[in-house]
Length: 166
Image (tube, rainbow, N blue to C red; front, side, top):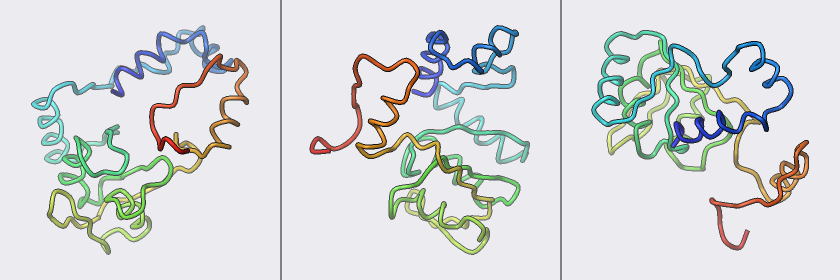
């Protein structure tokens, strides 16, 4: 999904803000860099997990499932979370009582807490950091402010995630 969203952003570059368009006009590629490795199969995913675990090489892994309860992120966490050479970066808050919330709560306490992943407890040895202000989650007022605050206001907004009553 992230690959498809990134491609959509590339195709919609005429909606980018002035700073991004200036970079684009100077030959910069804000969404393309030579060391980006897209993982599009389970076999390739396992290969990357094993490589990162065995080598400890620096890498930025962008993996889905925002609450760390399923998907590829769990494999990365099981392989690398206990190693203090690694860092887990959250963008915004995690859902209460989720594995992501447990990991996030360990921020500044590496080596003190454990989290259950796939039914097994794992020590959280990696550094945990949270960037506030970038979460895609917002309440009604936040969503309205975001949509109406755009330079190019959208003609319509389609909500694809959330509770019907909200």
